Image (tube, rainbow, N blue to C red; front, side, top):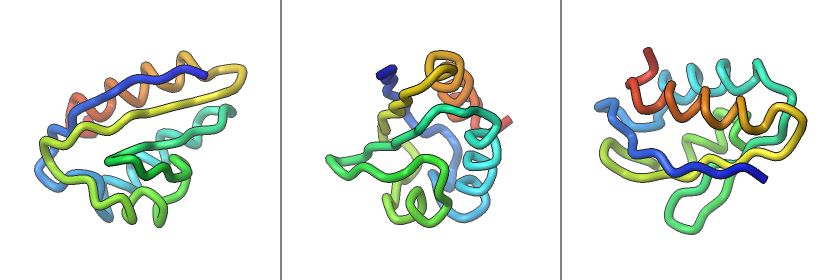
Length: 86
């Protein structure tokens, strides 16, 4: 399992539109993905799951992936979050 912690830099955190953009990016990979915030884990490929975390700007989340492209997935998604979904 590959893990990386990331601080959310976009103003909305992981809500609605940002969650949809994140899931779209995550679904480009085969590996399983979990997002953890404040000891709650959700499926990182589920918009509803991500939104249920209530992760806001400035919070740190942990991305965990397991599978054939897990390392590439985690690095790519971490950069995506760090750049504010650009």
